[in-house]
Length: 493
Image 1 (cartoon, rainbow, N blue to C red):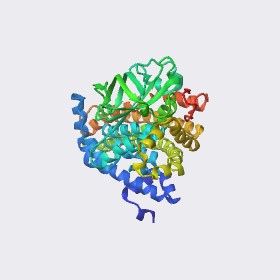
Image 2 (cartoon, one colour):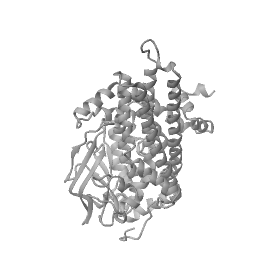
Image 3 (spheres, one colour):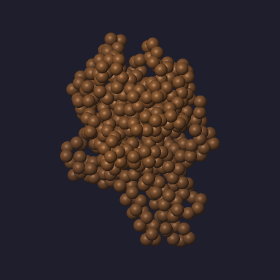
Image 4 (tube, rainbow, N blue to C red):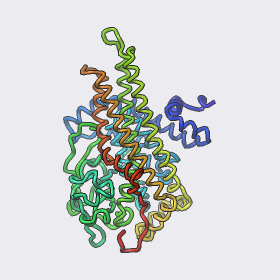
């Protein structure tokens, strides 16, 4: 009976992820039908778009690093990949399994080309702080613009900007942020803030229209003054002067952002002054490091597929797969992929349990059920941007999202991130070693996967930092995620 209800994609997912079959049989079919439909779209995207152009695009962007293929984002609009983190009440497609769907989507897309997939995924990372901070004043403007542009196949994208030239890993952990050498600083002025400094290695940084940017109000007290801002590309003084020449995941740019007296109004503070480590970093890392593990897993799957194709092709009258050593290596590689999936799915399921309650509750549903015209009235927007409006939304989030849950989510995310990335590098390295130096299309694919996988050990915090996070939560008990609390007006947390 189960097989009669499912497409071939559904059968594959249930075979590879037994937890999904268990959820199906427990009655959660509606949400899982959406999951299966999403992965079917990803398969079609890979088959018709990503795979046919991946190698050519990778080589072109080695010669022309500033080139960007906008067809990537237009195709993503066709399949609605840009609104996977946007609630359905706002026209997006975020459903019951929002984090799980994001992880499964990135696994599938990255099996085709992780550079093309990152151009899509980095956008969702930029969207995330607007959601997790409860910045409802921007849900009917920025998020609505993204959805409307997507439906017209006119992509409007976001990027997440935290890394600085002299402070990369440092800004992602409270202990290190306290002594980080920061280059970007925000100064309070009448009506808003003025930003000066740089961010670097920002995925989608040269294409995005909106940026979620973390900056210190006082570089001598960065942890106490770390604040999250919404920056728009057309703000005076903002520019992207540099696009990096990358070794891997080339289809998505890594850009430098320059802020020269950029004025950001008070309304564009996401959350409160000084709460950026909570809602701007740790909550985002808890939600995003697991999907980075799925990115690494998808890359490894792609490498395995091409290695398997190589192994089944005769050379000098023999097929490599007929050798026991190749068969055992294939089993090892599949074991790495399934180990990865267990880790990132554990994080994803926990994330859905946590964020699902926060985004699907009576207060949020009542607010989002109001006509958009009412929510965007100046009086309502001013309230949502005020201390008291933010306090109301924050109180709802704190009621449903507990510190201990977010701390556990961060631990599982960091564990999945470094384990999956290391496994992907090991799998790709082993495949290349076995294949040797021959010049074949399969080997060119695996070599690309090797370069692409390396980046997963670096972004979203280096694997070394992620190991420290797991240690500090699990063994030292010195790191705890604190969901931002309202505090007295005018008093910085």
